Structure formats: C-alpha cells, structure tokens
Length: 397
Ligand code: ADP
Image 1 (spheres, protein in one colour):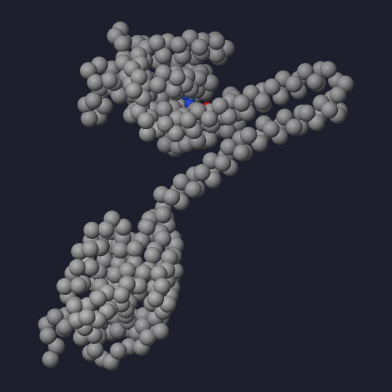
Image 2 (image 1 turned 90 degrees about the vertical axis):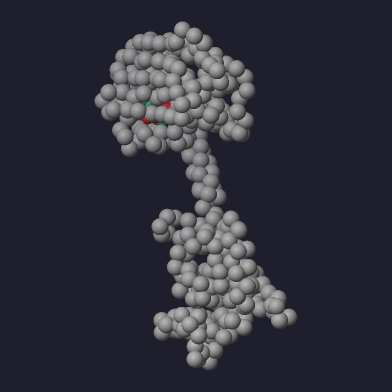
C-alpha cells in the first residue's frame, strides 16, 4: 500500500511521459514502476533536501537543484521569476524551455563536469542570462554519495545593455565626426585641383571649412566634457556656490546670440543668495546649453524667460529651480523622454544647421545627476518649451 505522502506524489501520466523523455535525453532508462518514489527517498533524505532549499534560499542569484534523474529538488525565489513553471519533484524539462540549458544539463550529467551556457529570453522582456550547471557529489547520512546538479543563473541584461550603448555611442560619435571630416577632405581636394586659381571659390570654401572644423572641435569638446562628468559622477561636489551670479554670467555671454536671433531674454532672480554645493563650471555649462537651445530652437517666439526660485522637492527638501522657457515651436510629446539621450535630436538637419552636436542635453542631465538634482522638460507644441534644472539647496538655505 502506498502511504498518503507517496500517493500525493505519484506521477500523473503526463509527468511519466515527460520523465521518460527526460531520462531518454540524459541517456538513462525509466526505473521499474513504483520504484521512483522510494528511489527518490533513498537518493536524498528529507533533511538534506530541506538544507539545500534553505541554502539556496539565501542566495541572491537564481539557483535550482536537480537530482540525478533531472527532477527538481529545490529552487529559490529568483529562479521562480526566470522559470515560473518550476515544481518540486517534477522533471525540470517541464519548466526549462531553453534548449541551450537542457543541453548543458545533459552534458554536465554525462561528463560530470561543470558547464556554462548563455541564453536569451524574449518573453515577457528581452533578457540575457548565463547559467552554470555544476554536478555536486553530496555525502549522505548513510556514508554514500548522491549526485545532484546545481544550476545558478546570472542576469547579463544590464551588462549587454551597456555593451550595446557603448557600441551605439562609438558608432554615433564616429558618424558625427566623419561627416565634417569628409566635407573638409572634399574641399581640400577641390582647392588643390579645380579651384586652385579661383580666389572667390577659395574664400567661400575656406569659410565652409572653418565651419566644419569648428563643428568637429565642438563635438570633441562636448565628448570630453561628458566623459569627465561621467568619470566624476559618483563624487558629489563639495564647494559652496551661489547660483545667481552663474545665471547672470550665462545671460551676459549669450546676449550677442540673442540679438542675432532677435530674442529678448528676461531674468527673474530671488533677492537672496541661492547657495548649493556645486561645480561652478559644470553648472555654467549646463545652463548655457539650455539657454542656447532656447535661443536657437525657440527663436521664433522672440522671448526667453529665465526664472530662478526657491522650491521644495517631492519629499519636502529645499531645492533651487532654474527654469528656461521659450515661446518657439515646442517639442512633440513622443520626443520628450528621449531628448537627454546622447545624439538624440528631433530634427538632425535643423540641429546641424544650428551647430548642434546632439550632446547638450545629455551633458545637462549628467551635470544635474552629479549634483543630486534632475532635469524636467515640459512642452506644448506650438507654445514653446520649459527646461527646468532642479538642484538641492544646501541644508539651512
Ligand atoms: P543639439 O546639440 O542638437 O542642440 P541637445 O542635446 O542640446 O543637442 O538637444 C537635443 C535636441 O532637442 C535638439 O536637437 C532639438 O531638436 C531639441 N531641443 C532642445 N531644446 C529645444 C527647445 N528649446 N525647443 C525645441 N527643441 C529643442
């Protein structure tokens, strides 16, 4: 007679078929009917299974333990999120849909050697994993050994995303540099050949070449600034800085551009100082980028307002807000979340025509991150855009 426990874990026909398939895959045969339960009990005593369960329960990485027949002995919570169909006592084949992993289990069992595989999951989200399948001979209370398979998983997704971003970044940076470089080479060739004796063409081409070389220099400057800020991202600035003089200096420096574009800049500053812990040059550069963008892209509105106020963060901490508002064409909502990505531009031709590199807002975002602040962007198409720098104020300010 089967005990209650044994009856509860008696295999259903589907499980029997899957187990046979699993065993065939591992190169084994099905044990005689009824032997499964008692064999499993002989293979791993209950306290050992519990110990394994507790042990892997404490691991941050996903872990699954199988017996030599490929049945699941234990798994932790992290493993359940990767393979939600895992059930203790059932063949792992039911839950593990990744052929690479099934192959690795088969190899580890056959060769008694650890295996490493990488696999990719599309559903519910694109994710990359590496799995280590390690055969472990476990000593039993009776003095024998039982072979189990320990599988651990690492989520490689963040690493892959960084690799992708780096590759994209290099491709974008090279492309941005190659375009003006190709133009320069083309004009040099023309000046050496057909335009050699043509002073009018020479002057015109030299002017264009200067523009292209300036663009390359600006791009390299922006790239270097970005990488410097990123390198120091973990170091919060510790120098006390007043924001008001920075705002005034940025505005003074851009008055000429404003006149050129027919735009009037209006500044509203609080009467008292706005002391923050910051890097003066970085903050200057960030604000200059925002005001320059407002003058370039929002020139049609003829007016740019810069408003600086004391405010509070969502959790009630004091912060300074520097808002740059223009009355130009604004930005369609689908672009807003991507504007701070490197090289992202709403209209590449327009940005290039304005001498843009596509790195300005990425720079602003990184500067603010380093200062413990953030950038918010609001825009109603047709009515202009507001870019706001939120910077924590020094305690007591
Ligand atoms: P760029 O060097 O091209 O100006 P930014 O990172 O500073 O690069 O800006 C990214 C893009 O955001 C710009 O190309 C432009 O399309 C858009 N943009 C930025 N500021 C404004 C603004 N005030 N009004 C409309 N569009 C803007």
